[in-house]
Amino acid sequence: MLDAVVIGAGFSGLYMLHSLREKGFSVRVYEKGNGVGGAWYWSRYPGARCDSESHTYCYTFSEKLYNEWTWSSRYPEQPEILRYLNFVADKLDLRRDIQFNTEIKGAYYNENINKWSIQLGNGSEVIAKYFITGVGCLSINATNIPKIKGLDQFRGEWYHTGSWPHEKVDFKGKRVGVIGNGSSGIQSIPVIAQEAGHLFSFQRTPQYAVPAKNFTYSSDDITNYKKGFTETRQKMHQSRAGYPWDYNNRSAMEDNEEERNRVYEEAWETGGFIISSTYNDLLVNADSNHTLGEFVQNKIRTIVKDPILAEKLIPDYHFATKRLVLDTNYYETFNRNNVTFVDVKASPIQEITERGIRTADNEYELDSIVFATGYDGMTGPLLKMDIQGKDELSLKDKWENGASVTTYLGIATAGFPNMFMITGPQSPSVASNMPTSIEQHVEWISECISYLHKNDIETMEANLADEEAWSRHCDEVYRNTLYSKTPSWYSGANIEGKPSAFLIYLGGVGAYNQKIKAIASQGYEGFTIK
Ligand code: N01
Image (tube, helix red, strand yellow):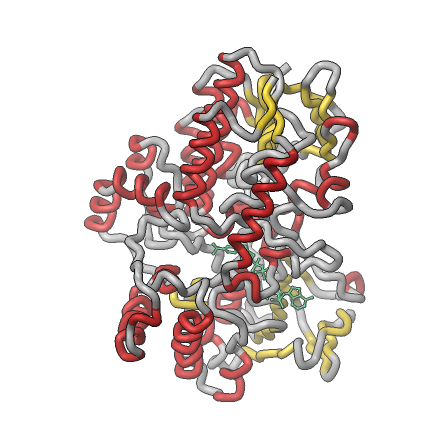
């Protein structure tokens, strides 16, 4: 019998294992892949790179660990992140408690013994007091491959960006169709276009992207970010979105157009997400948002040479209310002779044929199709498993067939005692720099388990009333923002039949951290412990 079972050896699972083991608990991590890394193990598509800056997209719980690793550039590429997570696994000697190539199929709570019984893919079962999900918000188990008629007839190769082959895919001279232009599409399209004979970009909805402005770190950059460790960590954990930025606390409406455009231009040249924090009301005030949207739209018009095509690449929704993307030469790629834009809103994809993709008005002959079509996010990775709590209540019944998804703080849910979700639904999760939010949850959960152990407490369960209040609060915060005006994968709009619900807490990482810490210091208010 183990103290805790953790699912997944990504950022969440690795730190959870380390943190609980340091406190003397017996822990086992089960991981579907053959190595550590989670999403970064599977998402090996061309151009895969993180949108958070390297020195912030890593663990900050140990200054020593932080300083022992050196990032090579402003934004880390997927292979570098994977090397980093392997370095952490080795440094902290984590592998001895990770079982690779092992999927967790389900888990049920046995009320007779107050323990979780966890079913592994190989048919065996493990028993643990605590069941902790570190499955991430986007997972290999919940990739979205749209149900387009005829995929099985296609004679070429096809791939999903989130489950990419480990060996290099050769696109040289090939006719490649990329469906989708979210983060994965926008990163992969420019890179594939350089290699392919011809690339066809099938776009349903235009997407806002701003330049990443990546660069190789100089030795001064490295010295400076390492020196800044303490301040960086502190700022990230107190911030709105998990980044160590200094926020401008002014409304965009307080400046005149000339000054605003100067501010936006400077942020555009700096590169990165900071542009959406140039004023404090860009995601709550439609007029303010419009000024930035217009600025970026004009940039697209300047970059894309064909004015008719430029208009097709310009979104008509509020800026950054679908996940903002950082790009490197995305809009520029549409000036290439070997790139064809296909507007599948105007002429929808009807089927995949043995030769390629047929839209309402054309058939595109292809050698390869890349699905950059995203994920069933947030709840998807959890609901792919059969999780049963008290009274044989399944999580699926509670969330999918029940009235709505409700959690307490995005960490726990009523009816599922001693189960914790790292960056679960209704926590800041993907609206933040993920490692920051992961650290907050892991530290909270491991403190909590220590508290239960020290106080001889058998079970801890979220109260339904407190959970419903938290879920209402999440919804209220969301409704005060412009996110509520735009359907996106954040609200499940990308998955056919998925109940619509915005599953991210938008109150800010710093405020959220204070809230969960206060709850802990008040003896875990909102939970029944016995
Ligand atoms: O997926 P997405 P993603 N026909 O859901 C289109 C993180 N991430 O993998 O908008 C035609 O954003 C869909 O169109 P529409 C990040 O959090 C981070 O790119 O639904 N098109 C959209 O264009 C990100 O938000 C990083 O109309 C179809 C695209 O596919 C999240 O992962 C890198 C379609 C899906 O975009 C997901 O990003 C990569 C259909 N039937 C990912 N179905 C970094 O940090 C879907 N689409 C850099």
